[in-house]
Length: 232
Image (cartoon, rainbow, N blue to C red):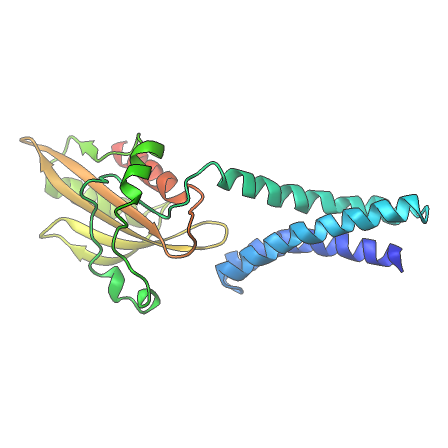
């Protein structure tokens, strides 16, 4: 009985480690469920390891115990993810201009954001300045109109492929929905282009996660990646 339980738990934990993200990535399960299944795989992996130890020591069932050690893989994956998350501040709304963050206009009208406060939390400003001091408006050596077209076109291209939800050429502002690659979390993005000198432009950007208190650094990474491509 213990041998079967050990093998079952180990294989189930491996399956959930792969299956949770896969179900979310393919759209079969919502991101929150995919993440929950992934987290559960770590717990089952820990139980499988405990059963493997008991099977080896008390029952001398070495083969099931060897299979049970596979539970170490999901456990390490969950621990690595949690450890990585601890490196980032517990905020989910990042802007390149903490003193004057962009305000979403269209995103709050989306049904999926009906119960969400889309205003930028003022207390995040100091955290961003301390933890993401490298983030700042992106300077481009292009007139504002050309910079806006380039910024908007880039948002719809690889590797981003954001869904544009608001396109205001008059104010050179657009909003979009971005998805994370693995679990397909949906995040809201707003970008504005303003003049900088005679023929230059400044690009302001704000990226906000819809779920969770911490974004595990995803929004800052998105801004850095987008600005890197924009500058090329």
